[in-house]
Amino acid sequence: MDEETDRKAAVVVYDRTKDAEKAISLLNGYDYYNSILRVEWAKPRQEAAYPPACPSCLEASENCVRVSNISEEITGPVFLDLFRRSGLLSVAYLDADKMTGSQTKCGIVEYFWKEDAENAIRLINGLEFFDLELQVQGPFRLHDLHRDLGV
Figure: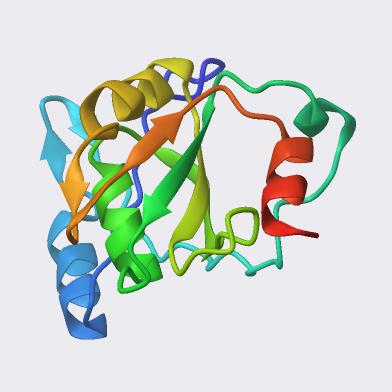
């Protein structure tokens, strides 16, 4: 929610363009409990090798969690779908776990709110997913991500 305007926002990802177009045409301008919905195309986020380094990113972030013991079979979209269930994502990153040298992956998920990160830890930590028990920990620091990924 945007604190200044009291507006709520969400991002919905569709597998097919025609499904997104249909949702936009049906919902844009719809009166939902005395609020007019604004539905439009979202600008895709440019993918980066890893999250950018900034002074605030180097500190522990209460909105971020580190995920380890992820099956190598997990794709980016599957990873996103799993963590979207805990709250509104800001950034998600998935890569090979170079720290352990195993065939598993590790990831970082940043939520817009601390409570969503706490939900992810509570709901997903210990979950068996693709025959591996996910480990979700937080808060994390970008320094730890660079160490883990060997960058």
